[in-house]
Image (cartoon, rainbow over all chains, first blue to last red; front, side):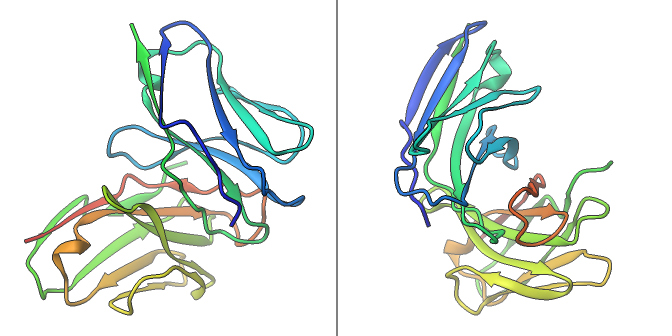
Amino acid sequence: DAKTTQPPSMDCAEGRAANLPCNHSTISGNEYVYWYRQIHSQGPQYIIHGLKNNETNEMASLIITEDRKSSTLILPHATLRDTAVYYCIVRVAGNEKLTFGTGTRLTIIP
Amino acid sequence: KAGVTQTPRYLIKTRGQQVTLSCSPISGHRSVSWYQQTPGQGLQFLFEYFSETQRNKGNFPGRFSGRQFSNSRSEMNVSTLELGDSALYLCASSPSSGRDTDTQYFGPGTRLTVL
């Protein structure tokens, strides 16, 4: 499975954009990048996914570099409810198994 | 649409007992995956079921087993419980199996405590 590297923790001021980086230098051409978040002891919540183009939905934007070796999840206007652990996952093609790393603990500061 | 539901939400058992956890997927979803989350090991994949067949299995001992019914509901069973089995057990469902654009949606989990 392609390994992902994320900073263990980040802080962001409320109302500002939160930019969460992820390195996935061994990603294969047909593997998708998925982002989930987990608020304390709840089930992980799907945020967004992409293959090579930038993606945006109502929750976030996903920017994938042209070489696909890294990506950034952007929460445009962070609120206190965005405090969570964010997981960047490279999903092996044709496989339902998600391999979670240790993620980034994002804390939104009032 | 209702989300993924898991029952029970909390469970306390003693060592040596067995336990069965239940998962009802989102309506129309046919793939169900199970994960274990512990403070030490994080979130780890247990197994996936699709059309009542186990499609994929993680690296867990045979004490961990599962099944899926014709209505896509799934159960997982842990026999001969050990203290280390204390964890949050999460179930996720998706519309099909192995389709890369299908998203898995997680339930709230079952918190198992083994005494």
